[in-house]
Length: 279
Ligand code: C2E
Ligand code: CA
Ligand code: CA
Ligand code: CA
Image (tube, rainbow, N blue to C red):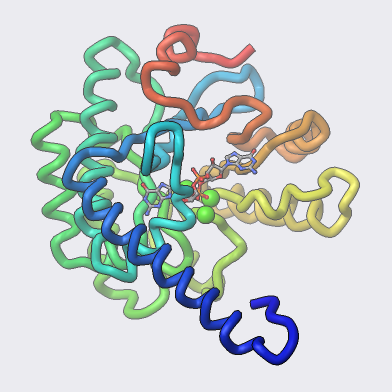
């Protein structure tokens, strides 16, 4: 609180009251959103850099609190985790993303992967694999096209149950990528303990690139490491031509960012899916 004068305390507590009220509203609203289907998924293209071919789409959750007003996921996903709504929310995401994937498959769009974000609480939930398998059965979507994006936080804690889970996922053909790579608190030892399929280099490392020598070295090192380990790599948050040129020099990783496309509703993607590439 930016309180001034003798009455600072009450200013601060008004701020707290306001935060509390906002949170309560969000909480009530989010429960309602889930029940009344005010949620929707946007999809952001992932491209390979040589020819601009579409290789994937990342599903990104949207909550329209009121017509034209979106609550940012960075705000409501942490809240959903706190109030125990992330499991039903996550299940909603899988059902709908896979339903969409199936409908694209039916239209003949069959050669890109679908990336879905999974939160730590969700992946540690013992019912997670059944719920995912059920969504796959219900929709008939092809699990080989599915990539789960998990953050390094997901890997903290006991490793054995997660190794089991990844085995189970791999048996179905589902792949697992580390999201926001390089920003978590976990040590790199997870890269030797877990069978992973790819890394998504966090967009913070692209800041000031190519001029910023430190970030540039970090991106280069992460891509070299991924290559050495046989992991797929995606660089997130590409906004400028200069960043893209550098990535070309660094071996053509897959890319995702506003330079190519913002996240879009499914209907708006059809022409891109038809062309299969961004010019
Ligand atoms: P994320 O998984 O790292 O997703 C990428 C975010 O970066 C998206 O924000 C996307 O719109 C944004 N982005 C993509 N390209 C650019 C770019 O060039 N520049 C900039 N500045 N940003 C870019 P969004 O959609 O707001 O999502 C924020 C976060 O919310 C996600 O970060 C993810 O952690 C979480 N989230 C979104 N959907 C889900 C979901 O279904 N489940 C879970 N558990 N988390 C989700
Ligand atoms: Ca992600
Ligand atoms: Ca990310
Ligand atoms: Ca993130």
